[in-house]
Each structure stands twice: as structure tokens, then as C-alpha cells.
Image (cartoon, rainbow over all chains, first blue to last red; front, top):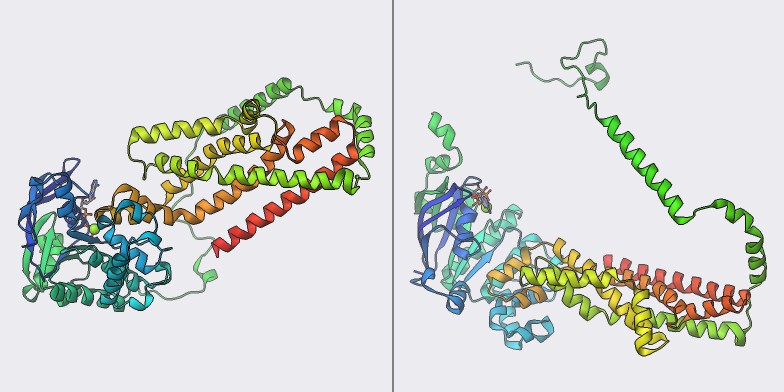
Length: 251
Length: 284
Ligand SMILES: Nc1ncnc2c1ncn2[C@@H]1O[C@H](COP(=O)(O)OP(=O)(O)OP(=O)(O)O)[C@@H](O)[C@H]1O
Ligand SMILES: [Mg+2]
């Protein structure tokens, strides 16, 4: 099991945001996180990524609990996870290839990472192969700022591949994209999960995309798990409970 | 519920109809008192400042004869090649070189200090505070004071001017660069951090490439300012056209002085146009 999370809890200023969240993602599986605004989806991913410190809970990667690790070992375990952002977070002035190479920085000596001109040839070749995997090898030497939003998000996916991550966490990867580009990126994420045996967890705000592309869907409601089901078993009632809990209570 | 129908704008509002809400601005009784107090303070400050600077326009009226004689002496400008134009042009080049080296040689120091003095790239709060303090010091000491200090060390001449500009410009440009780094989007840097890049790698591959347009714009602006400063540095012995202007005033050769000032005018306009042209190209 590359990623498993148990009893994850988090409070901000005494206000509980996550409470006992348990889930796991297997290699080759695309899992969607659904939930209303503020239900704790981003906080979950940020805790897993180590950007936010959880109050309680165990996060294990490939069977090793992260809280047992320290220093260099912890860092190496974390590097097996890559994050994809809604706002993409590439450097617009640099080429697609240079941005993808940046995913490999942890493997490049510091002096050789001061400018893209010094990046090792094998890293550049690997980055080009990753761009090829997302269908953008022909745009490798274009500045990222010149690419469309959908293409930019695919470059970000290539950067995660170049990081050699076996867990990819994506926070609303398609929220800034038009419907066609969103379908393309979702198809890419599913294909990577299935063919490269990567564990992919994606926060989505479009339930229909989740149900069509994800193998499994997890619903978060006020910081707790509401359901964790194969996407084919998620019903309209499940979704209603997520997005209109108050209306349901009143009914 | 009545269905909405579209009515012409003019017909929609009947001026005689009573509004359901009355327009009553909340009263702020203290407002005019505050305004009056601020005005009184500003006027008072100016009165004290006029005292403190001996600001007496009547002196200017009395002294107009001296000015007229001075101006009459300056016209026509001395355009003899050997005596004025050639040394003037050569000294102008020196002034330009002082400004250029003073700007470019301060880049490595300014870059390092800026990276340490920007909140999003500094390794530690104490380093941040220390770098800010160093930048403040170099910014607070005027370049002309640095020039006087360096003249005692390396003697009169352009070299002292270059050293002075390097010091002062490091302080100013480091501060400006640090601020533009703090303003940029932190996302790309965070993305590299989560990918396991160390701090130097994050700065070199996310922060710096994002701020390059702002950096170059500020660099050109400082080049512009430094060329003008190096003129003034010439007046205290750091060489260049400033020195020649000073000499021609002291020896009452006002016609040469005017020629030198005209050359300076051309230099300033050229440098200004050049940096504007580069900035336009960068923005495109
Ligand atoms: N750094 C923080 N400090 C205080 N409160 C926070 C912080 N980060 C998140 N929260 C709060 O935690 C709750 C969950 O936020 P989170 O961003 O995880 O929600 P989300 O499910 O991702 O919502 P959205 O769909 O809007 O992205 C929100 O109420 C938010 O205000
Ligand atoms: Mg979110």
C-alpha cells in the first residue's frame, strides 16, 4: 500500500477541521476526494504532504510510518510523493523542459542546479521522456507561459513523473481548466495511475468527473469521512448528503 | 409575484414618487476639526522650515545682476575642440564608466543580500534581520560620503567614485530587489519545496526566474541614477565631467562650463532613452 492514512485529525485555533480521517490509496488506483467548500479536502492533502502538521494520525508510505522517520530518511520518503496544484505553480518564463527538470532537483547536486544550463544531460533526457508521456514532447522548448492552461497542467504532471513519485496528490487539478482540457487531464491522471502503477489522489469539485474517471471516491463532510466507495457505487443521495447537508437535515 | 417587464429607463423612475429609504449620511462631527488641525500643523512646519533654511526671495531679486553677468559670460558656449569639447567628451565617458561599474559591480553583493533580506527566501529570521541592517546602513550613508572616505584611501580619481557607488548602490538595489522578491507568487517555490528541492535550488529555479523582469527594470533604473550621481561625485574629486565643471567654475571659464553642462544634458537624455528602450522590450 503506497499511501495509507489513519486517524488524521487537525484543528485550527481550537476549531476542528479534520477528525479521524482514514483512507488508503493502492498503486494503480485513482481516488477522488469530494466535499463541500471547507470540508477539509485541501487540509487532508497538505497534512499528507507535510506542508501542514497534523494534530494526530499516522501517515504511511509503502508501509513505513512517516512519524518513525527523521531527517534525511523522512525527506526521502516524502520525495516519493508529488503534489499537483490548482494554480499549477510552474515558472512561466522557463521552458516546459526546464520546469519538468525541476521535479528532479532532489537528485541533482546543488551546484549543478543553479541554472538549467548545468542540469545533467540524463536528467534532461528523462524530463523529455516525461513530457512525451503527457503528449507534449513537441512543446519542450516553449516557455510555459505560452502554453494553454490544460497544457500547463500536463507539464505539471510531467514534473511529478520526473520526480519519480509513486504517490501523486492533486488539489483541484482541473478547477482552472475548460471542460475539454479538464477531461484530458483527468484521462491522463487515470492512465498514469493504471499504466505506471502510481497511486493518485485528486480533490475534485465536479462529481461527474470523479465518478467517470476515479476508481474510488471518498466523500468528506465537516472534516469526517462520509463515504469511501468504488465510484460505481456512489449514488445521488451520497452526493446530496455532501453538498446540501443542512437541506437534508431539514427534510 | 409579478413578472418582470422591461420598461424604458426614464419611465421607470417617477421623480415625485416617495423613496422608501431616506438618504441620511452618518454625521462625523470631528471631521472638520481634524482637517483644520492637520492644516495648522502643515502650515506651522513650513513656517519653521522657512526660518531654518533662511529662505528669502528678496535676496534673489537683489542678486539678479550677478546672475545676469554670470549668464552673459557663459554665452556663447566655448566649442573649441582642443580646449573644451575633447576633454569634456573624454571626461563624460569616464563619468559613464563610473556609473556603469558602480552599478554592475554591486550586482553580486546586492543579489546575495537581497536573497537573505527577503522574507520568502531568507534562511532564518536572524539572518533576515542582519541582512536588512546591512542594507539599511549602505543605503543610509550617501554615496558622496563614501566617495570622500575612499578618496582618502585610494586617492583622487574615478576609482574612488566606482567604489563609492558600489557601496551605496548595493544598499539601495538590495532593498528594492528584496521587496520585489517578497511580492511575487510563492506557489512555484512551494511546489519545488514539496518536490524535495533545497533552499538554494528553490531560489535559483523558482524565485529568481520569476523576478527577473522586475530585477532588470530596477537595475536599469539604478544605472540611470548612478550615472547622475557619478557627476556629483566628480565635484568632490572622483573624476569625470563633474570635476571639469567644478574646475571651470573655479577658474571663471563659464563658457566652458556651459559646454560641459550641455554635454551632460545629452548624456543624461541618451542614458534615459536607452534604459526606457530596454524596459519596453522586456515588457513586450
Ligand atoms: N492555515 C489555516 N488556518 C486556519 N484555518 C484554516 C487554515 N487552513 C484551512 N483552514 C480552515 O479549515 C477548513 C478546511 O479548509 P480546507 O482548505 O481544507 O477546505 P477544502 O475542503 O479544501 O475547501 P475548498 O473546496 O474551498 O478548497 C476551512 O474552514 C478553513 O477555513
Ligand atoms: Mg481546497
